[in-house]
View 1 (cartoon, rainbow, N blue to C red):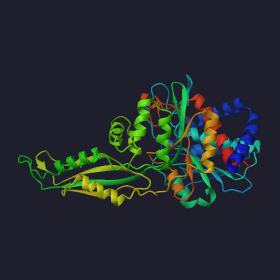
View 2 (cartoon, rainbow, N blue to C red):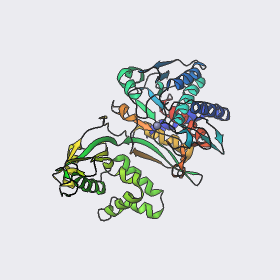
View 3 (tube, helix red, strand yellow):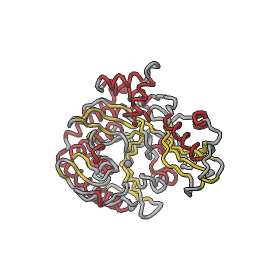
View 4 (cartoon, protein in one colour):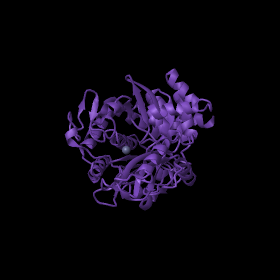
Length: 463
Ligand SMILES: [Zn+2]
């Protein structure tokens, strides 16, 4: 109760502060920064261009920042707003790189135009992740301007290399610059708000994620002449094994985050869907519900267990030669608490073929941190911020993909992933992240900036 009262007091102090702020002006300024950031092409590395822009904006406010880089073209920026030090810092991160583009596919607006049209801002990275970048940068600027008293430093990082080159970004920052960024809690990408029929319906806070693991299936057989088919053909054995492993329903296991996620989702879903979420926990009906999700809702299905997707298959080199080996490369996404050796043993049992071996490896081993708490003061502060800005239920989320938060969580720091509001149907229509028409609702840009401000002040403002 004590902490609830304190949280309320902090929220009140921050909202008094917010009342003195001219949000129309701030929104216009934020939009300008977001468009400018999208207009900087950082799709092939070259994040230093973004860092130069950010540094200039911070310099203009008298906010000192440092640039640190493993590669001079792929720099990171660190800025710090000082608090009274009674709590460990809050780290807010946005990544400055984007995935690549195929310019020919951007038929309406160029990939780096940042065009505002029909209530949307278009461009590569406008959601992923320049939305977080501009909101974190603007929040840093607003903290400086308003002089809000802070119990903890707020550290803002513009981070490079998130899209598959984390050695330049978070990997480098954690290994070479940890003392400059070491926080007590961190905020980064990966949660967000789902909008359906022009209304926000729920928000998610990412508290944990699945862990990428690699393995190959290697089938071996006797090579020979293609005119005399053999039952020992490696391709035949591999094909059977691939089918068995892909159709396998691995043991289901929920954690605090996924259990709460499905419970809360059941409360806000249509009756049939809600029943399926509840059925997951009913031994008599769980298998049927899982099969439905496997067929229709692959994201939900993936959250239930360590998953396997066979994504590369290789074997043979000439039509009339039976090959002696064939391999399949698997994308395995492990639950955060998975015992991989035990899991590989289960896979071997499922395949049940001495001609096919499960060979782990082939993928960089990432740290496996425990999930961040969904009962911490910071988590509740974030929930409060989402409710205040969007007035919707807030669900903890286990991401099926991987983010840079894993490396910070692995240092024992709780990390929470947040993000802007997107239309549920926008992704399937080709406007989602990494798509050829990535776009963000203009309204979502403003709301995201407000959310960042509310979240940061709720977590860091002095009590
Ligand atoms: Zn991203």
